[in-house]
Structures are given as C-alpha cells and as structure tokens.
Image 1: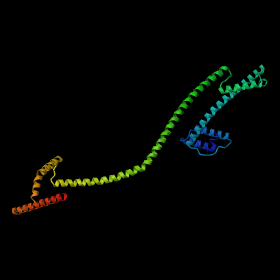
Image 2: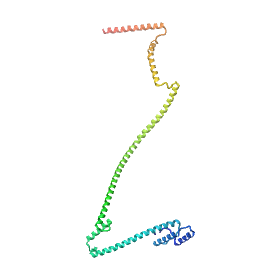
Image 3: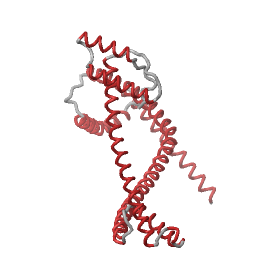
Image 4: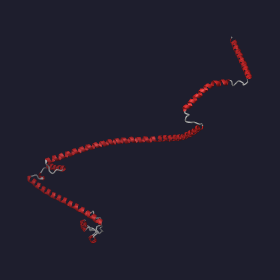
Amino acid sequence: MSEIVEGTDCPSTSSITSLESKKTSGNAGFDASQIAEVKAWLISQFDAAGKDLPDFEYTSRSIAHIHKIAALSQAKTQAATIVANDFRQKATEYRSQAARIREILEHVGLVQDSLPSNVVSSAQVLANVANLLNIRDTELSSFLVAMADLSLRKTAVEEKRAKVQKESKELLDYTRKAIARLTYLKRALAQLEDDVPPCEAQMEHWKTNLAIMDSKERQYLQQYSNYKAMLNRVGYSPEISHGVLVEMAEHRKDLEKKTKPILDTLRSYQDLPPDKALAALAIEDKKRHYAAAEKYLEDVLQSALESNN
C-alpha cells in the first residue's frame, strides 16, 4: 500500500493539524475523526516505506478518497493477517504431527534411512499420487473414491468433448456450405459483371429505340390531330362507321357492274360522226375496207393453195 501513495503529494503533520484546526473552528469542513484516521494511516504507510510524509494541501474530495483507500487497505490487511495466522497455526500443527509420526516410525524401525530405496520411491510415488488426487490419506477407500470421482470427471469431459466435436463438425459443415455458397455467389457476380457490357449496349439500343418511338408517337399524335381536323371539315360524324362504309363500297361495286355494259356500248359510239349522212358514208367506207380485206385474204389463200399443188 505504500507503493500506492508513494508518488502522491500528502500533507505533513503540521499542515494536517492546521487544516484540522481550521475546519474544526469553521464548523464547515471535514470530520475530525476521518482526518485523524487519514493522518495516522499515511504516516504509518510512509514510515513502513522508510520515507517522510510530503507536504500538500488537502481538499474534501482528496480526504474522502484517501479515507476510502485507507479503510479498504486496513480491511484487506486484517483479512491477510487472519489468513497468515491460520496458515502459521496449521504449519505448526503439521510440524508437530510430523515429529510425532517420525518418532513413531523410529520406534517401529521404519525410519526413511533404514528403508530400502525401492520402498522409499514407492512411498514417494504414493504420496505424489495422493497429492495429485487431492486426498488427505493413503487409504484404499480414499484412492477408490478419488478414482471414482476422476472417472466421473473423465466421463463428463468425454461427453463435453463429444459435444464439442459434434458442434465443431456442424460448424465445419456450415463453413463448407458457406464457402460453397460464397464461391457460387462469386461466380454469379463474375457472370453478372461479364453480362454488364452487353446489357448496357442493349439498354443503349433500347434507349435509342425508345427515343425513336417517342418521336414517332408525337408524329402519330400530330397526324391523328390533322386527320381528326380533316374529318371534322368534311363532315365526318361518329354515325359513319366501318360497317356503313363497307356497305357503301359494296353498293358502289353493284352500280359499277350495272353501268359497265352501258358504258361499253356508249364507248362504241364515240368513233361515229355526229351527222347521219357522214355516218352513212363512214359505214360504206368501212364496208369497202371490209370487202377489200376479204378479197385480199382470198387471194392469199388461193396463191398458197397453188404453190402447194
């Protein structure tokens, strides 16, 4: 305890006395009994260390702290003194008992010097085993009890060892699974990292297509607005549906079929002159051309027949 307070600044006897008188006269300071106890304890500790008590100023906090340390030190010192006295008493008893046992052994002729070396070695081994087993004597029953206790401890240790081995095996399996899982995740991560560039390129392509589609959407919306305005201008109404338009188209086809023969007949009369006399002359001219063509055909056929004959 002297080492604890060796480097601490402590007050001298005069300073403590003056401080005690000041606090006692002021009725606002420390307890006189605590100051006296601290004073006596510090002087005893420094005297035991062979050093003088240094001068320093006390405060309420330092007095309380040192008094607490002093009380704790005195309690531990008292406990250590009791234990030491007990050990001394036991040592005295053991020495007296050893002397009696030695005297008995001398009377019966079993002094260690007169015994063979193997007997001394065996007795020493027996004593060491007894100390190892923590038994007070070398009776067979004590050894059996100690061995039974040791066997129980061994069984408990083996059970704990088996349990620990089982837990270690489970942890090893979990570790292997975790390592396998980690390896799989690393491979998946590497695969994903390899897939990043193609995916980025695909995303850029999709982004470009999206921009084009957005532009087309605006264009189509503008065309839709234009067509809607045009339909409004031509008088389109919601009653004109697709079915109505189909029916009108079919009706138009029927009218075209009916009017086509009439149109063909009228087209045949387009080459005729508008005057009747001119029409008659044109007809006669066509007849002459027709007759000349028939004659020419007959001549050609006749000449062909003659050449074959």
